Amino acid sequence: MLSTYDGLAAKPDAVRASVSDRKDEAGLERVGRVALAPTLVAKNTAEWMTPTERTTLLREIDAQLCFELSERYEIAAPTAPPTPRCAPCSAMCAPRAA
Image (tube, rainbow, N blue to C red; front, side, top):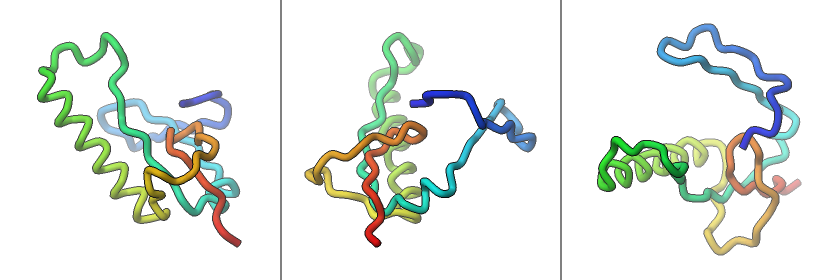
């Protein structure tokens, strides 16, 4: 959920797509635990995929997000109390314990 384009920098080494990113180093330092929401496909998109293909794709995206984020953060249990949503990653973030 991108709230603004301010601060986005183009990545010149992207081969097949136009990629821009922004990283809030100070904000990321405070994140210690994330809870992932299931990936969703927007309505009227990916209509060329079968339901099985769509499900397979969504499962793979969820698995990759979980793996990559677990390398950096603790993954919160689904029953963990809700905390504010992170705009860039759509993950639920909790402040890092001091």
